[in-house]
Image (cartoon, rainbow, N blue to C red; front, side, top):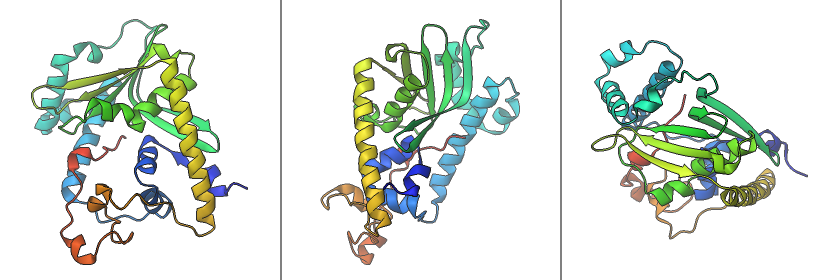
Length: 265
């Protein structure tokens, strides 16, 4: 019998990424709510990212944003740079047949899990649907790495499953507004073969999660990653997992702030 915990569990792309990277860390973070004291620099970066998301949302809703820009030179710089390279995105559509929605939420049930996504901006018409996502960390990951990320997979998959659009009519574009010289975009198109592959990988991962949850209810811990994986060196749970001594934990470097997932509003 499947546990009640499984039936109540909502999953986002962040949880799927963590579950893929380290199931034990997923257990500590999401099931047991274990957290370390926040790092001030990390918090500042997340706050600035959230402010940019709020700025873009207010602009899309037709609300004034001048007060934001006047008191925050960083936001003003990002917005000016983005307006220079992608003015068509900031131009409000005059065609009523074009659908635009900021911070657009969608949910999809797969097995006993409720998958949730939040699109920073969704632009759609009768022929195509474009998902746009704002990133405010300075160094974009490699395109192949981004393609394998569950955000890319899940965002495209959920829209195809919850709309009448064919996979071939859907795309996802990441905008890195803080890149070195000017905002940089990475676009992913979609197709039916990718959709089927994502469905397969998603169901495999959820099957494993169901099994781990059932064992967890029987007091068995989630699996750990192999000891030769370097990710343990920068994990806040390395000592709890007995992957190195308390003395070594003192000198353990903090995670790369550029890779930390920013928080959407």
